[in-house]
Image 1 (spheres, rainbow, N blue to C red):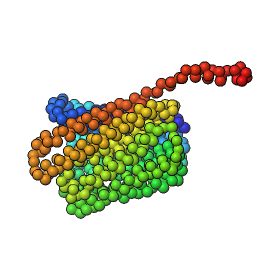
Image 2 (image 1 turned 180 degrees about the vertical axis):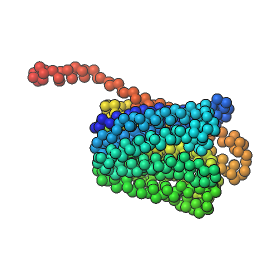
Image 3 (image 1 turned 90 degrees about the vertical axis):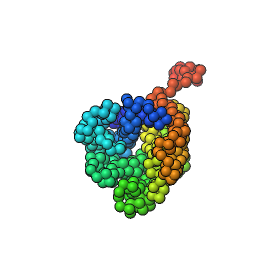
Image 4 (image 1 turned 60 degrees about the vertical axis):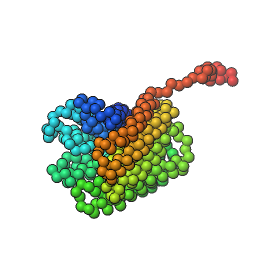
Amino acid sequence: MKYESQKIAYAYFAVALGLFAIQILGGLLAGFVYVMPNTLSELLPFNIIRMLHTNSLVVWLLLGFFGAAYFLIPEEAEREIHSPTLAYLQLIILVVGTLGVVLTYVFNLFEGHWLLGKEGREFLEQPKWVKAGIVVAALIFLYNVSMTVLKGRKTAISNILLLGLWGLALLFLFAFYNPANLSLDKLYWWYVIHLWVEGVWELIMASILAYLMLKLTGVDREIVEKWLYVIVAAALFSGILGTGHHYYWIGAPGYWQWIGSIFSSLEVIPFFAMMSFAFVMVWKGRRDHPNKAALLWSLGCAVLAFFGAGIWGFLHTLHGVNYYTHGTQITAAHGHLAFFGAYVCLNLAVFSYAMPILKHRDPYNQVLNMASFWLMAGGMVFMTFTLTFAGTVQTHMQRVVGDYYMDVQDSIAVFYWMRFGAGLVVLLGVLLFLYAIFVPRKEVVRPGRLERERLENDPDHVAAE
């Protein structure tokens, strides 16, 4: 660790991993409700479980991004973070807001209250006071990191990371705008949901991945930055108008069907570029970096993002196909693999690289860490395939033949059982990752080693030699 303020990242990573575990448990519970529908129906209804699952996903990913920024910006800017105190205050605000959200959702507090009660917009259900707290935390963060970069060295990695983080904060302001007209509501709602995950988050992903490639492969910065500019240009060009694939059936003008189809088809390009970038950097670097686990997560991030966000997104993005598949389990298949590949793997790659440095140890428990990758990735890929098959059957039976919704759900129940089994595998991988990250490996001392070290450090023995 080159800079003292980098240790701020440890607190963010620890809280993020705690929320990650909660998010996975929430997802597993939601998957179980699919196969046993009356589970906790009175105590914790499915809509609340789903809210906790999706909201905790977004919050822990954001905490990971913030922590990654606090870790890499000092190195990129070659100076300490402007104010560590503000960084910890920001974390406290986010934790308090998260606890407030959980209590409000679970106990349905202040229902209907304009300030304290939850809202009815998917993914943006947080009460207004929590949204305001998020804005305050974001402003603190942006001030802190922007001042650090402005006073220090400017690099492509830090500049694009800042662009993505500023975009993230500004687009969140649309969460406060909730027009009465449902079509208008959805028009602006996607400004947050889509332009986050398929816009500014891609900039954050590209910059963090570029930083990891720089550290893990040893490739020249100039080469990394050239790739980075190409990826960012492709992401912005395709992602902004690609928002149109959400405007097909919400009452927007018909021209969005063509704009959405064309530009969202191009969204495969930045993810393919990121995958190519990661493998080319490893091939060019030919560096035997000791942290193999971080490298595996980085490459896994690029590959799974390409398939989850790129290929599976393309499968149902054309409006002629989406007319039938919209809102089926095919959407769930795309969403799970896209989020896991692009952002979950990215955060876990950063954690795997930074945590040993923050704890002043060599990379440890790497075999367990890499095993956790294969368990999580394997479980998520299997889940994606089962949901894809479920969605295909659902599309035919429900949208083409016209069978009743619940009859179709009974017909695809076997896929939900397989999805639940895949979730258990993912949970096992998460527990293994947490153990590998937090529990140091016990050093094995070979017989005679201590005696040899004692003799080597004994001046009399050295003189005799």
